[in-house]
Image (cartoon, rainbow, N blue to C red):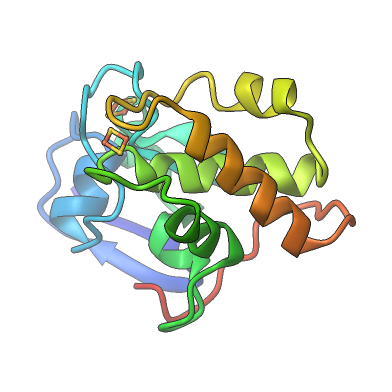
Length: 168
Ligand code: FES
Ligand code: FES
């Protein structure tokens, strides 16, 4: 099947997609966007988190065909060209990235949290990121990164994720 959708603000097409293929596979293998990671393929780790029409989802649990005509934002779409999004920058600066396998999902999940709750408490951060597994950091630096990003991004909730052309 052929899938046409908008990814990171741009129209994209993937051809010759098996009907049972996941959105994660379509993004990574069909559209050349390897930012979203495949760590469990069972909805357990959050490494594949993306926005689908503004809702945070595990791309491994969404059929590629369900993306037909819809809008997707991946971790690549949060940056503006070469300039990292404040959440991405905060993860780097706080030392929240070790092997990095969990990082794309955590960045997208953090972005989603901060647009809803601009100044989250430590508890709210832990609750929001509970579906994202990190095997390396012990989470303390991830919490630090979220707080750094929150401090830089201001205090106004934003209703929808901003897809920005240039990220794929
Ligand atoms: S790869 Fe999708 S939740 Fe783990
Ligand atoms: S940095 Fe390695 S899994 Fe999180």
